[in-house]
Image 1 (cartoon, rainbow, N blue to C red):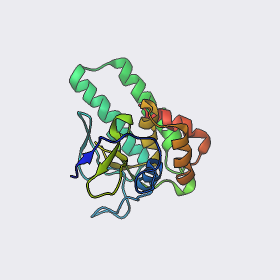
Image 2: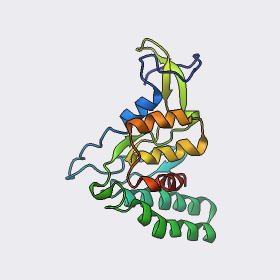
Image 3: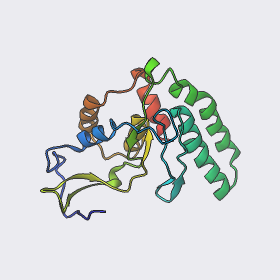
Length: 200
């Protein structure tokens, strides 16, 4: 790992190399997943488990984004809650409703992204204002906006935006620049609904 000197202050301008954080995130979100060994197509997930804070995240490879999100995020977190705090029937019923009704409505194959669907792309996985900093990496010439403490996986690019919007720290201008480079996924009219789903 490289040392990041964080003694710099951000003025929310472009990075030292002339590339803004929105441009960097757009580049990350257009990095397609490779085809894993033994598979015929790119897959959603990651070869190993990761951590989001202290929460272990399963990342079993999946051809379907809806299935990956359901099993490796929603149901996996519900299982962790059950194990740590006991079963909360009201919470379980709410999550099961989301899994059975909301996820198929918004994320099903053939709907999200239209007939072509979506491709898995690399996401930071835990991008919020606490995981971004203005700093200088020793091998670079100037200070720039950087991110750290990822919980990476190959996912739907908008999955990242749910966390970013939930915790704030990213301006409307940031999202405008980002969406100029990475347009909202079809159906665009359901964008806000997807963002709310990804905040769970």
